[in-house]
Amino acid sequence: MRNPWIYRAPAIGWGFFILYVCLAPAETLRTGIDFEISDKVVHFTLYLLWVVLLYFGSSRGYKKALSYAKLMVYWSSAIIIGIFVEYLQMWMAVGRSAEVLDALANSAGAVAGIIISRVAHRILC
Image (cartoon, rainbow, N blue to C red; front, side, top):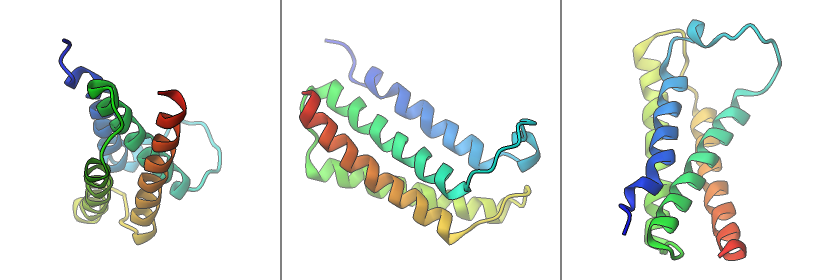
């Protein structure tokens, strides 16, 4: 049997990507492409995708739907990490600002990720 952690590798990588884009100095993330999008939408999307990757990484590794307890662990972990990242943005002073609405967008994205994952798992598996 394959190591079930191999299925979680995309979620782990995405988690590190979130840390990078949320904690890197703002100047380093400028791409030269100018388009307007709310940073709340970005926060929502980052955490939605992260929870979806966590869900499917775990369910593929164990080939079954996740328990309610594991869903709550993923959701609460995403919320705690999102709040911690916002706190680090305030503390590090690298041109980033901590906002409560960003933390709420992170939490909403995590909730949407759980709902989408649950529905998609029932449809696909």
